[in-house]
Length: 166
Image 1 (cartoon, helix red, strand yellow):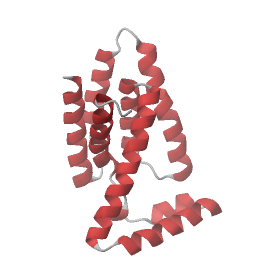
Image 2 (cartoon, one colour):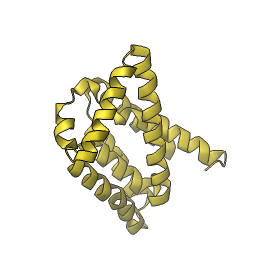
Image 3 (spheres, one colour):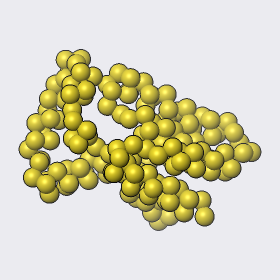
Image 4 (tube, one colour):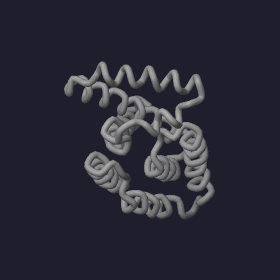
Protein backbone atom coordinates (compact mmCIF):
# COMPACT_ATOMS: atom_id res chain seq x y z
CA UNK A 1 0.00 0.00 0.00
CA UNK A 2 2.80 2.41 0.90
CA UNK A 3 4.61 1.76 -2.38
CA UNK A 4 1.41 2.33 -4.32
CA UNK A 5 1.04 5.80 -2.74
CA UNK A 6 4.68 6.59 -3.55
CA UNK A 7 4.27 5.32 -7.13
CA UNK A 8 1.07 7.36 -7.61
CA UNK A 9 2.71 10.49 -6.25
CA UNK A 10 5.83 10.03 -8.39
CA UNK A 11 3.71 9.34 -11.50
CA UNK A 12 1.85 12.61 -10.90
CA UNK A 13 5.19 14.35 -10.40
CA UNK A 14 6.60 12.91 -13.62
CA UNK A 15 3.60 13.98 -15.69
CA UNK A 16 3.51 17.54 -14.34
CA UNK A 17 7.29 17.97 -14.47
CA UNK A 18 7.38 16.96 -18.14
CA UNK A 19 4.48 19.28 -19.02
CA UNK A 20 5.23 22.33 -16.85
CA UNK A 21 8.85 21.85 -15.65
CA UNK A 22 7.83 22.09 -12.01
CA UNK A 23 7.34 19.65 -9.14
CA UNK A 24 3.74 19.81 -7.83
CA UNK A 25 3.43 20.76 -4.17
CA UNK A 26 0.68 18.17 -3.70
CA UNK A 27 3.16 15.35 -4.42
CA UNK A 28 5.66 16.65 -1.89
CA UNK A 29 2.91 17.16 0.71
CA UNK A 30 1.45 13.69 0.07
CA UNK A 31 4.86 12.07 0.49
CA UNK A 32 5.59 14.19 3.56
CA UNK A 33 2.32 13.05 5.18
CA UNK A 34 3.14 9.46 4.26
CA UNK A 35 6.57 9.79 5.87
CA UNK A 36 5.10 11.26 9.04
CA UNK A 37 2.55 8.43 9.17
CA UNK A 38 5.22 5.76 8.63
CA UNK A 39 7.72 7.15 11.12
CA UNK A 40 5.53 8.72 13.79
CA UNK A 41 7.16 6.48 16.42
CA UNK A 42 10.67 7.29 15.23
CA UNK A 43 10.60 10.96 14.18
CA UNK A 44 14.38 11.31 14.49
CA UNK A 45 14.87 8.73 11.68
CA UNK A 46 12.50 10.76 9.51
CA UNK A 47 14.13 14.12 10.26
CA UNK A 48 17.67 12.83 9.78
CA UNK A 49 16.64 11.34 6.44
CA UNK A 50 15.11 14.63 5.32
CA UNK A 51 18.01 16.83 6.35
CA UNK A 52 20.67 14.42 5.11
CA UNK A 53 19.30 14.92 1.59
CA UNK A 54 18.08 18.51 1.87
CA UNK A 55 21.20 20.25 3.16
CA UNK A 56 23.79 18.85 0.69
CA UNK A 57 21.47 19.26 -2.29
CA UNK A 58 20.55 22.81 -1.26
CA UNK A 59 24.23 23.73 -0.94
CA UNK A 60 24.96 22.13 -4.32
CA UNK A 61 22.10 24.09 -5.87
CA UNK A 62 23.23 27.37 -4.32
CA UNK A 63 26.78 26.89 -5.61
CA UNK A 64 25.95 25.67 -9.11
CA UNK A 65 22.35 26.74 -9.69
CA UNK A 66 21.75 23.49 -11.52
CA UNK A 67 19.13 21.76 -9.38
CA UNK A 68 15.53 22.88 -9.01
CA UNK A 69 13.96 23.60 -5.64
CA UNK A 70 11.20 21.07 -6.24
CA UNK A 71 13.75 18.35 -6.95
CA UNK A 72 15.50 19.15 -3.67
CA UNK A 73 12.24 18.97 -1.70
CA UNK A 74 11.27 15.71 -3.37
CA UNK A 75 14.64 14.11 -2.66
CA UNK A 76 14.45 15.35 0.94
CA UNK A 77 11.01 13.83 1.53
CA UNK A 78 12.11 10.56 -0.09
CA UNK A 79 15.11 10.64 2.25
CA UNK A 80 12.74 10.88 5.19
CA UNK A 81 10.65 7.96 3.96
CA UNK A 82 13.53 5.69 2.88
CA UNK A 83 16.30 6.57 5.29
CA UNK A 84 19.79 7.86 4.52
CA UNK A 85 21.43 4.81 2.95
CA UNK A 86 18.48 3.73 0.84
CA UNK A 87 17.91 7.28 -0.35
CA UNK A 88 21.54 7.66 -1.38
CA UNK A 89 21.13 4.53 -3.49
CA UNK A 90 17.86 5.92 -4.84
CA UNK A 91 19.59 9.25 -5.60
CA UNK A 92 22.23 7.45 -7.66
CA UNK A 93 19.63 5.39 -9.52
CA UNK A 94 17.55 8.50 -10.34
CA UNK A 95 20.59 10.34 -11.66
CA UNK A 96 21.78 7.41 -13.78
CA UNK A 97 18.25 6.91 -15.10
CA UNK A 98 17.99 10.60 -15.99
CA UNK A 99 21.33 10.54 -17.82
CA UNK A 100 20.40 7.44 -19.81
CA UNK A 101 16.88 8.70 -20.51
CA UNK A 102 18.01 12.12 -21.68
CA UNK A 103 20.73 10.68 -23.91
CA UNK A 104 18.20 8.36 -25.55
CA UNK A 105 15.66 11.17 -25.91
CA UNK A 106 18.21 13.59 -27.39
CA UNK A 107 19.52 10.92 -29.75
CA UNK A 108 15.95 10.25 -30.91
CA UNK A 109 15.41 13.96 -31.56
CA UNK A 110 18.78 14.27 -33.32
CA UNK A 111 20.14 16.69 -30.70
CA UNK A 112 22.85 14.47 -29.24
CA UNK A 113 25.73 16.50 -30.69
CA UNK A 114 24.22 19.74 -29.37
CA UNK A 115 23.83 18.33 -25.86
CA UNK A 116 27.38 16.94 -25.85
CA UNK A 117 28.75 20.39 -26.74
CA UNK A 118 26.64 21.92 -23.96
CA UNK A 119 27.93 19.37 -21.45
CA UNK A 120 31.53 20.10 -22.45
CA UNK A 121 30.93 23.84 -21.99
CA UNK A 122 29.25 23.18 -18.64
CA UNK A 123 32.19 21.07 -17.44
CA UNK A 124 34.61 23.84 -18.44
CA UNK A 125 32.45 26.42 -16.66
CA UNK A 126 32.63 24.32 -13.46
CA UNK A 127 36.42 24.31 -13.74
CA UNK A 128 36.51 28.06 -14.36
CA UNK A 129 34.02 28.77 -11.58
CA UNK A 130 31.45 30.35 -13.91
CA UNK A 131 28.88 27.55 -13.87
CA UNK A 132 26.10 29.66 -12.37
CA UNK A 133 26.25 32.23 -15.19
CA UNK A 134 26.44 29.44 -17.79
CA UNK A 135 23.39 27.67 -16.35
CA UNK A 136 21.41 30.93 -16.37
CA UNK A 137 21.92 31.11 -20.17
CA UNK A 138 20.50 27.60 -20.79
CA UNK A 139 17.01 27.58 -22.28
CA UNK A 140 14.26 25.81 -20.30
CA UNK A 141 13.70 23.28 -23.10
CA UNK A 142 17.35 22.23 -22.83
CA UNK A 143 17.07 21.36 -19.14
CA UNK A 144 16.35 17.90 -17.76
CA UNK A 145 13.02 17.43 -15.95
CA UNK A 146 14.55 15.42 -13.11
CA UNK A 147 11.16 14.85 -11.49
CA UNK A 148 10.22 12.69 -14.47
CA UNK A 149 12.95 10.22 -13.54
CA UNK A 150 11.93 9.72 -9.91
CA UNK A 151 9.31 7.15 -10.93
CA UNK A 152 11.56 4.88 -13.03
CA UNK A 153 14.29 5.31 -10.42
CA UNK A 154 11.93 4.25 -7.65
CA UNK A 155 10.68 1.28 -9.66
CA UNK A 156 14.24 0.11 -10.30
CA UNK A 157 15.07 0.58 -6.62
CA UNK A 158 11.89 -1.21 -5.51
CA UNK A 159 12.46 -4.19 -7.82
CA UNK A 160 16.05 -4.38 -6.66
CA UNK A 161 14.93 -4.54 -3.03
CA UNK A 162 12.22 -7.12 -3.72
CA UNK A 163 14.53 -9.41 -5.66
CA UNK A 164 17.48 -8.93 -3.35
CA UNK A 165 19.76 -7.13 -5.79
CA UNK A 166 20.28 -4.15 -3.46
